[in-house]
Image (cartoon, rainbow, N blue to C red):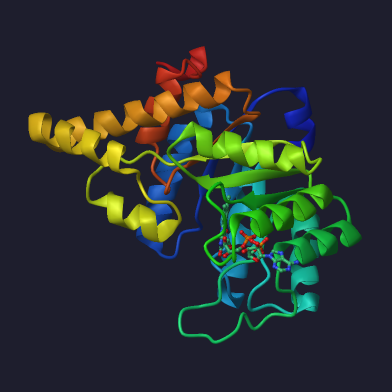
Length: 291
Ligand code: FAD
């Protein structure tokens, strides 16, 4: 299996993120999506971890299944919350035994209503240390271009990120909508002496209904983009909004790559069409996947 850090050393990577299905309907959707996206030959794919003991098996089974039945290189996400240090070590060892060598180490969010994270490790950096102690992983971490919502200020958040990325191999960002937010993050890290690859996370807005959800999920859609989508809606309805959202995301990707981003990471929400369309607009679709 290939380490993501080695891929990044060779050139740009293009990757897709999925979440583990919770029921048969979600499973069927994901199987279809994987079948449609695999021909795009992504550098790697990542599988989220929903937190809690129950999610452990789902993420493990999906990444292990991908290794057995597809040509994809999977990366497993893992969060500190709700696990003891021993449990996290067990999960990491199980990943290794299944052949998973790429890990995204995350702090995670305490479940709604819980007063504390309930785990022994609190921050992602501690999980990076644990993964390093076990060994055999290429380790990524999360980065937040606008600052993590819980941090006191942007400067201290950047300091924490720089400390975390010094120990890790690469970072993947929360989604965002302006290239300057990403470039500001990379510049702030460089000012702290950290130049490890930071992959921008891309989430196209394909409907006006999803705009409020984006803010809850991590990054608000800027007013100029909402206006643009509303105009599209007034002239051409839902399909025009979808096309405008794909165009905005394609434009963002073009700017990022021109500015030297080490690759692109697409949040797919387990659907294939938006990612396929952006891929095609960027000219990334391999010839044998066009028919
Ligand atoms: P952390 O590095 O843990 O930091 C969290 C906060 O603590 C920040 O404000 C930081 O500044 C501060 N901090 C960090 N270290 C220290 C320290 N040593 N001392 C004091 N303060 C500190 N969540 C999931 O549940 N499952 C997933 O699969 C998942 N995947 C994600 C993928 C990506 C690409 C991204 C960007 C996020 C993902 N998340 C996921 C969300 C993530 O769990 C949340 O952002 C969570 O709130 C914090 O985890 P973190 O790893 O981002 O931050």
